[in-house]
Structures are given as structure tokens and as C-alpha cells.
Amino acid sequence: MVDTKKALQLFIEYLQIEKNCSPYTIDNYKRDLGEFFLFLETQNIEQLALVEYFDARLFLTTLYERDLSKRTVARKISCLRTFYKFLVREGMVGENPFSLLALPKKEHKLPRFLYEEEINQLFSTLNKDTPMGLRDAALLEVLYATGTRISECCNIQLQDIDFSLETILVHGKGKKDRYVPFGQCAKETLQTYINTARTETMSSYRTSHSYLFINYRGEPLTVRGAHYVLNECIKKAAANGKLHPHMLRHSFATHLLNNGADLRTVQELLGHSKISSTQIYTHVTKEQLRKVYNSTHPRA
Image (tube, rainbow, N blue to C red; front, side):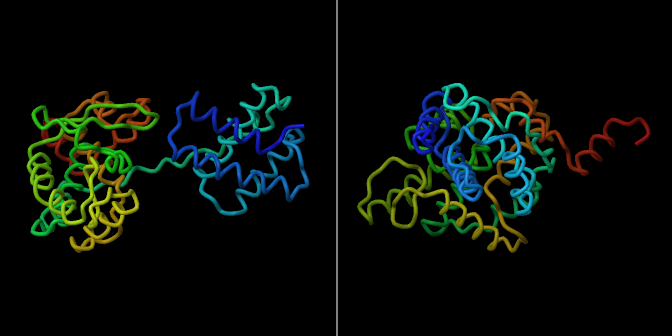
């Protein structure tokens, strides 16, 4: 008989040690597995080894009945497929009931990004006369200049920045590090922020740490806090909608490709392990299509 708690504990250790998954990914696995365990209770299935293909199909049906997106459903089923694959490998169950379950086709949505004019408008509305206003400007500059994920950006330490080479050591997903360059605008804003706003705020609240971005009390800025900062910035810019951090990452990649960068370079800058993850950015804007057409067609 397989103890569910023991199986979950061993699986989490497998994700941490062998798969080198991030805490965020592991939390998603825990959440998805928790939902599945509750489902087993409703079906009076007391052992993981007793789950059959029919039960897997029934669980999939319950997910669809909740009107979840195809992407979310696919993630949950993929989680369970991986979980049972691990259990089979460890000899805890005889077969994987999710191995033959078809995943829903993913929805191919183009990433939302800001046009260059919108980026310029966003930066023009920032108030750099206050410590936190300067912090906001530095945060936006780094996100757009480097294309880092918001979690990566919040984890940047002072020692990760090389101003002479204009690069930042980014600690990416799966503990994969990469060096990302940044430009003059980001450099100037960062140096001003570090030497004035950051130093003064941390001195006032007597805090001491090496995290680059801080909140108004001088403590490390959290991902949630960064989300709030960006949404406040978009409000000040009098723009519609919300500014999700990934929109700046999408804008970074889109603008690089539209201005001639090759796909492999963008892949490395974004920290994608697969080129297929980067290929979604090969879409181009109507303005770029028109520009290329007018400059290349003989009778344009």
C-alpha cells in the first residue's frame, strides 16, 4: 500500500534534487496534486495504485466542467502524468493511468507587448524626484533593457551588476545563470537610484542587504510589490489596462527581432532552453511589415 503523503514527499524531493525545479514550479505541482487527492477522496479511492485510466478520464472531465483554460487543464494533467511516471519508476504503482490521456491542444495566443511609442510614453510619465519614483524608473529600465522575468529581476543583487561591462548576472529558472547586457539609459538610472534613493532609504530605516530593488521601508521588493508598482506606473501614464511584467519581457523580445536581432541571440538573452519558446516572438507588427515591404518591394 502506497502512503499518499510519503509518495508526495518523495516526489517533491525528486523535483528539487533531480529535476532542479524552481520553488514556484514545485508550488504548482503541490497545488495540482492536492486537487487530485481531493478528487480521489470524492471517488472513495484510498490508494494511488488503484487509479485507472477511467478515473483519469473522469478527473479530466471535472477540470473541463470548471471552465478552466486549455493551458491550465494541460498543465494539471501533465503534472499528474509526471507524478505517476515517477511512482512507476520507484515501483510504487504498476502503471501510469495518465500516460494515454490526450492533452488538450494549447491555445496559441500571441504575446501582448507594448509598441515603442507606448514604451516611450510610459518612461516619460515617471517622476524621478522622489526616492520611490526613482526606484520605479530603475525597475522599468531593467525589465525593458534586459527582458528578465519579474522574479529574476527582484532577485538581482548589487554584486550581480557589472557597470564597466554593462551586464547583469541573472539567476534564471532551474538555477540556470546567464549574463544579460543593458544600455546607457538603464545604466544612468540604476547608478542614480543606487547612489541616492536606495542608499538614503536603507539608511533611514537602518536596513542592510544586497538586493537591488527595495520597498519604501528599505526591505527587498517582492514580486507582488513589483506588480503593484507597474500597475501604478500604467495608471500615471493614463493608459488603459494593466501592465503585466511579462509585457515588458514580450516587448523586449519583439523590439529586438523587429530591429534585426537573430532568434538565437534573443533566445539566449531571454534564457529559453528551447528555441521553440522564442519562436512565438517572430510575429511582427503591421508597422514593421509595411516598413519592410516599402523598403524591399520594387514597386512599393
